[in-house]
Amino acid sequence: MSADAAEHREPMPPEVARAAADEAARRAEEPAPAWIDAVVRRSMWRAVRIVLLVLLVLWAAFQMRHLLGLIVFALFIALAMMPGVTSLHRRYGMRRGAAVGLMYLASVVVVVFMVSVLIPAIARFAESVRENLPGWTSALSEWSRSVLGVPIDTSSTNTGVDNVMQTLLGWADNAFGIVTSGIGIVFDVFTVATFAFYIAAQWPQIMHALMTRMPPARQRTFAWIADTSIQQTGGYFYSRVLLMGVCGGLGFVVMLLVGLPLVYAIPLALFMGFVSEFIPFIGTYLGAALPIVIILAVQGLVPAIIMLAWVIVYQQAENYWLSPRFSSQSMELNGAIAFGGALAGGAIAGPLGAFMALPIAALITAIVKNSGRTYEVVAIDAASAAAPTPPGDGDAEAATASSPDA
View 1 (spheres, rainbow, N blue to C red):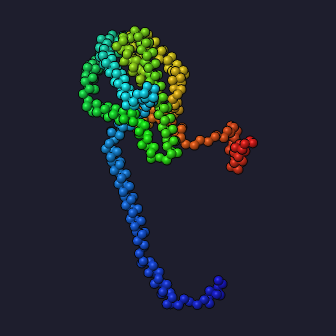
View 2: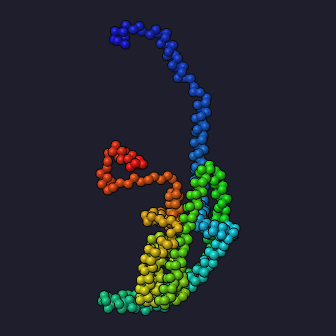
View 3: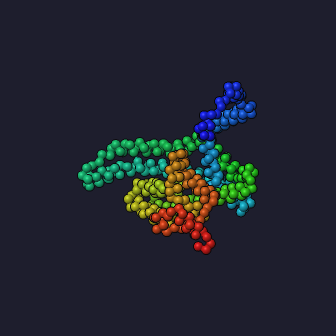
């Protein structure tokens, strides 16, 4: 509209302006439709219910945190037993519950054997240290006087070590009674054993109940991932048990050859095999350090050096020959993942978390590795990696590389 036309436009009649203003005021004061209020109220109540439900679940989980921890550990035990239970069930026709019971019986026999040989070894070692301590301290003081020119006062050391030995002797005498009389420990062990029994024995029913909530395509994927993860996790666990037997058995033979008494050799071999294979990274050093120190205290320097040399040789043989052979059917973990998993497990659940870290990391890695979509990697040379190409050129090269004629 031109300026002249705007100047000659007639003004709006007053009655029309009042009518428009009244209509606008009426619309502003008109309430919203009832269905809008109902939707808002339902949404608000739904949000309140969800928040209250989440808070209730968190409160219940916090109150049951000890029980939840036991259930998680029971699940770990069941997953570790699953390949053995399945093998006994398929090969010998044994019921899954009976197979789990047989594995429990074997575990009880091993634990009773370890306790029966460990307690006397602790008591005898304490007696041996007490008898030989004056000679050791005298030799240490003489060596310090002849080499350094300064004698070492070992009177306080003798008193302190004697007190420690007294404590060890008292613990060795009362350890079995403490274990058997600890009602809380017995209840926790019973709880873990019960949950692990039902999970391992009724795993097919559990899988069936879970898959009934999934469509057929997802059922096949879920079943394949579960079976593969269990086989790889169980394979890792059983390979560790086999390596534990080899490490402990050979270490037992070496301890006997260097003259260590049988009452020391049996528990030390069990300790070395278990710690070396089931504690990540530092387990090798912890498992070898205690036997070497005890051999040094009981037998002398030369047998301790022989034991140290055997540990070094065996560790190399295990890393380059035994472990790849025994773990060929299980999943190999990346070193960084294993290290991070061990640190995370120790930070979350202490020593028990560090113990469970590698099998749980193996399970998670198996699920990630065996699920999801993968793509072919476009091969590039070092020159193209160092000098990024423009987007247009890169798209053209990718199209050329993916074409059948390229």
